Amino acid sequence: MLAKGIKRVAFSGLLIAGVAAVGTAASSASTMPPGQTTYLPMQAISYDLGSKAAIGYFVRDAGACQVVMMITEKADVQAPSTFSAARLRLALLPGQRAGLDSEEGRTIDLACGEGADTLTVRNGPTAEVATLTN
Image 1 (cartoon, helix red, strand yellow):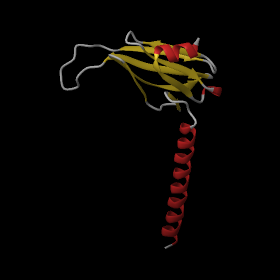
Image 2 (cartoon, rainbow, N blue to C red):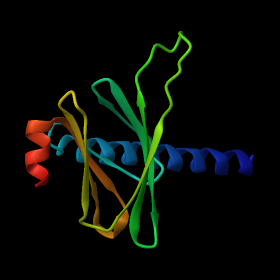
Image 3 (cartoon, one colour):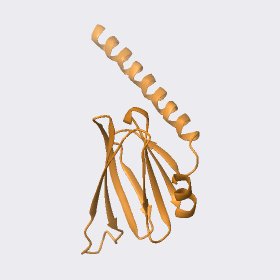
């Protein structure tokens, strides 16, 4: 009986913590400008760059954001593909930025956050995003 009560209290605490975390994430996301998202380590990053797709993640290592992205042609998942992907590896110190532009006029801008705890990605038309980077 006591074990059931402890489990119920533990589950309630976990539920409350989960709701608080979702509320915090939602409130921080709502303060972000359109086209900008902040990621935590190992959170999936995926962006459309016109005819190409950029998919990856970052980890914090040695005080830097270690970013790994696969860049590939978008293809029909039902059809056999002869395309190969390219891997992009970046080490960004806190405050440093890097940009990736496509020929179709799409850009993603990666910025390593304070303490390399976050990676902020801005995406959109090159004319808008790239001018903010320079």
